[in-house]
Amino acid sequence: MQQITWRADEELVARIKMSAQEQRISMNEYLTWIAQAATDPSLSSNAIEEIRSRLRLAGLLSDFEARDTVRPDDDAVAAARRRAGQGTPLSELVRANR
Image (tube, rainbow, N blue to C red):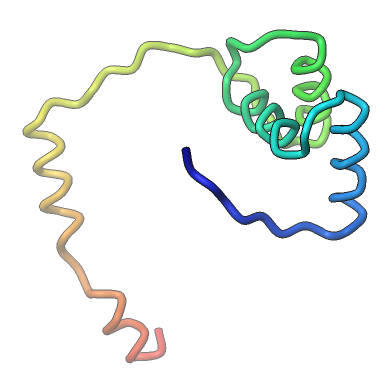
């Protein structure tokens, strides 16, 4: 399991804390619900749908369908990696104030 640090203003944290208390869950679990609702369209429950609706209204959730993806062939991936390694290194751009 991974841990993240998140910065938010006190008013937002207070609203999240209140919402978590209303659901009778921890803030951590509530924030996990929000992240899952925003990223996993297969989840469904009244609480998740309410969160998803709020995220959609705020412009933070796009409607997408889960779909099968096709993995590119190994040769295409190798060619892309070779191309990605070309060009001016970032350190030189910084030194040149670009």
